[in-house]
Amino acid sequence: MQLLMALLVLHFPLRAGEVTSRNHTTETFPHQGFEDRIEFWKRMFTHYGERDVVFHDLNDLRLIYGVVTFEKSVAQDVREAVRQKERLVQERRELQEIFRDLSEGGTDPARLSARHRELLDRLRSWGYSISSESLRERAEKIRYQRGIKEKFSEGIIRSGRYLPLIESIFRREGLPAELALLPHVESSFDHRAYSRSAAAGIWQFIPSTGRRFLTINALVDERLDPIRSSEAAAQLLKENYLKLGNWPLAITAYNHGANGMLRAKQLHGPDLRLIIERHQSPSFSFASQNFYAEFLAAVEVARNHTKYFGRLDIAKPLRFDALHLKRDYAVRDFTRVSGLSEAILKDYNPQITGQVWGGTRSLPAGLPLRVPPGRGAEAARRLNGARPASDLVLARAGGSVRYRVQPGDTLTAIARRFGTSVTTILSANQISDQNRIHLGRILLIPRLSQPPRGS
Image 1: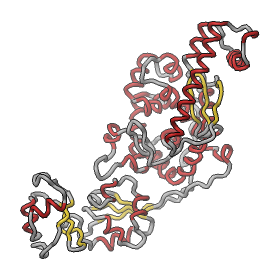
Image 2 (image 1 turned 180 degrees about the vertical axis):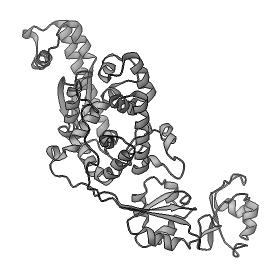
Image 3 (image 1 turned 180 degrees about the horizontal axis):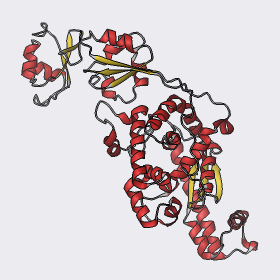
Image 4 (image 1 turned 135 degrees about the vertical axis):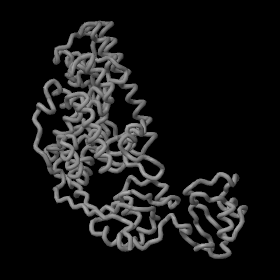
């Protein structure tokens, strides 16, 4: 019998979080000049939680003006999020008013409140001028940042499932293993993560960049696949490095874009510190300026997570069998196999979209479908004899048939085949225009009066 699947069994004996290549020196990932930024992000990752919001200077992250701690989390609570946002905007406005008052009214201690004196002492302790002009400038550079201690520790736990695989991918591409920790900054290793800019997955690819390396369509979005998206991230980071010449620029380009960083390099040279200090561009914002320092902080915290979080129950490394589908299959062809429920298949294959799980579309040919280790051989044996999902009759229930539209089909031909009428099919599927059927659509054929001709 001709095999309809190719089976690949993958076993990964690495321990969760194990470093799979040599540590790289600070020559590869220089820290000098980024120390204050690194320390700031380490505190955001390990000290301040989701209820803590830190007010700080936009450029000098040593200047922390205060912390607002809320009683409730904003997670899953839209009204609380709105309330907190209003409070934070008001707090920032009040801080700005204090700076403006100091700028216009002077710094005579007799007229100052405790809050005024506290802010002045903080500026003086870091050697800042307290002239009227500099105080006005400080007022416009007040920013706030919410802590992510809980989110980061959850990311450490999740990372255990994928990190050995990602490190092996990066090692195969000749890249530093530390880069495998970049998802701590992007997504906290949450493959379900979506951003407001439509970025998705642990590597937060936007659609346009993702399509350069990955399959993104109605059935499959490989941005949500931690393994395939890691292969794509390795390629993108390698491209960035070859184009820009050093890792600080290449990593920053992952956030800002390689062309944008190339323009900055051409203007200011290859030193990221000077680019941050001098480059003026609306798109080179706080996030881009700090992306490299966030990465360095994430590496430090992830590599020493017990120091910051104590003992964590790290997820076990992912192991699986991969079935490379030679043709389309219905999901139910797999769920009939012992130990392959739909929930398990979803867990191992987050890249498959809801259209497939909803039953309206099949698992497409060419898909590497992952199943729990030890299940692949059994599934291949069982499914090699299964009828393909592209066969005409997909399911029968209650006297009805679910039929997938094939190349060359018309409603007239389908109705004739199943012994029914075009009007009946249109009504059953709420179709107003009989010309509006498309290849692959599932049609419900009610009141089947005879077996389909040719079956």
